[in-house]
Image (cartoon, rainbow, N blue to C red; front, side, top):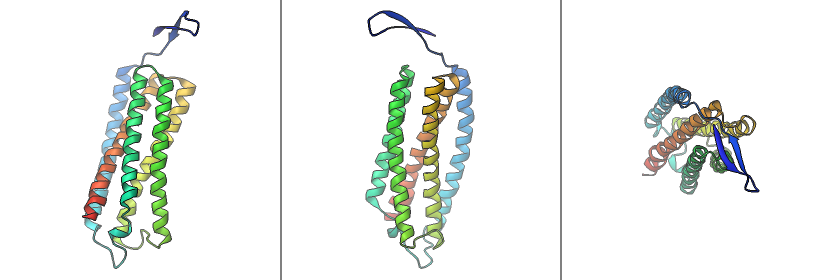
Amino acid sequence: MSVNASDIDGNSVDLFVEEPDHDAISIKAFGFWLYMLSDALLFAALFASYQVLANHYAGGPHFAAVNQPFHQLAESVLIFSSGLAFLHGMRRLGERAPDATLVWMGVALFLGLAFIGIEIHDFYALAVQGITPLRSGFLSIYFTLVGTHGLHIFVGLCWMVVMAIQMRTKGCTTEVVSRLVNLKLFWMFQSIVWVCVFIFVYMWGAA
C-alpha cells in the first residue's frame, strides 16, 4: 500500500507499506488458540495436583518457607506492566509505527527479564537452604507449577528477541505480523496464569 508522507525538507514522498493479509493472520491466530487450549489444560492439571499435594509436607518446610510477599507483589507488577507495554506496542504497530513497537517490545522484554530474575533468585535462595523439589510432595508440585510458568515466561522473552530481529530484517510482512499477534496471545496468557498462581498458591497458602 502506498502512503503519502513528507521528508525532512517538507517534500512529498511515497512510502510502501505492506498491507497485512488479515484472513491469513486470523487463520493462524485460530490455530495458535488451539495450542493455547492445550497449554491451559497443562496448567489446569498442575493446579489440580497442587490442590492435592499442598499439605503434603512430609515433615519438611511448610508454605511459609517459600512465601515471599514482597517478591510476589513485585513479580505481579512486573508481569502486568510487561503485558501492558506489549499491548501498547501492538497498538502502535496498528498505527504503522514499527519503530515505536520495537521500543515498547524492549520495555516488555526488560520487565519480563526482571520478573524471571526475581524467580530465579528465589529458587536459588531456597535451594541453598536445602529446600528442593525432592524434599516433599508440596515442594515438588510448588517448584513444578511455578517453574513451568517461569519456563513459559523465558520462552516468551526469547520469542520477543526473535521477533525484534525479524521486524528489523524482514519488515512488517504478513508472516511477521501473524507471529506478533500469536506472541501477544501467548504473553497475555502468561499474565492470566500468574493471576491463578498468585491466588491459588500464594494468597490461599498465606490464608
